[in-house]
Length: 546
Ligand SMILES: [Zn+2]
Image (tube, rainbow, N blue to C red; front, side, top):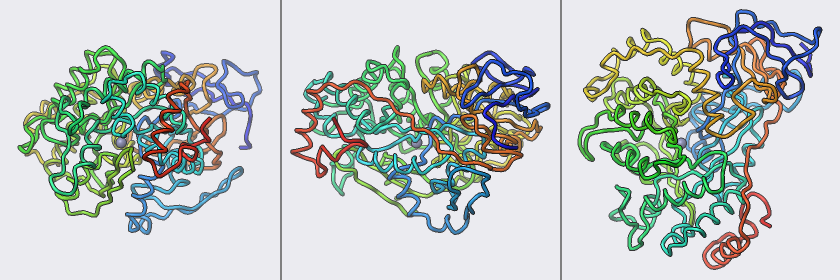
């Protein structure tokens, strides 16, 4: 088929939850890069009868570009050799490039593989401001998908200094300046205060924060104050996505208490809590783990201002990549695997450890169960959306398998039999959770929900004016197979996948926001740079700073 500027996707079964369409047979019309209400008879048609039509997938949290991801790629040469990605044979447009896969595919392979899954929008979840240029360069080199990133805040010296002085308004102005300077889409907080404390505490007696009201060394700043300041900043600046929070105590037994306290600290205002699975454990620090998913999701169910993505663990290879340096140090010392630690001066940290989740390992089985419990006990799929924290809990290529686990109880129960039950005593999964997600609910947790939480009004739906990002699946009872190999994918009106084959790879667009900046605040940041930073203020940020 040649590339039409008009296309009628005819007779498919459409799932467009944002517009209240739940499995209705109807046409979807495209003109240029937009969805339109109708087209004249005689417009080119794509016969979608018997097929399932959804908006293109939207990934709210993945690690796909930038300095941390690139460090991880360099750590994993064995993955490159094991999973070469030959250049696809494209019909037209854009250079086709070879690359490598594994848990952290190279840039081109990332774009190809996301599109091949029917995903057309991806958010890179953690970029240190100092590495913003690198992240943009890699995203420029990642075809097809529209992408943006969240900029790391909450452990940087300037912010902590302002908070210590009680300069809340200046902290907000700084956040606005930084989001604009980095050309970011949202504010990300990772282990508020904990990374700064860990970096500053020297080789011996490494310290991390363990609770919301613990002060950072001699400072009066606490994790609670950081959360309040940055959540308040994102909301005061009316950013399209609220503050995106990786809580303190990731991966620790008993951390559900900290997670709930963090949610309550921001009660009444919009906030997004990411990879909730890694923050929903009961038990006590240093003692046995158990599931606390029920308690955590009950809070989320009752609080419409709170949204989450799950961060499901999938069995198989993974690579843990996070700004949470202390967590990776712990994982390194407990597993003895190879490890990278990066100190990003004045700003943040980064740690990387390759990993594998095994069915027979008690903790991995618990993590797998906790994620599924969160999904299956969630009352509002619009606020509890799908992620594996790619590649931390598993790679994005495992999403189809995850969808099958959610949609197919018999399959899920069969898999449950094969996992280690040692830590599952408190897990609601053992109660035999009967819920099976419908196709409409899958459309919510994989596209409509994330788009709404991101404030992307032209994504995640198929109403007139929306971006013409559309995925068409063969309706297959094996949901893993169905979602792994869409028959057609359109990105901004371009047919990128036809008959299951990648045919075109146009460039994607960057998603970024530019809040208004207070000139006095920018001047003060410059003073700070002149005194302490090794990078000059003028050379900082993703664009020349006005
Ligand atoms: Zn993440």
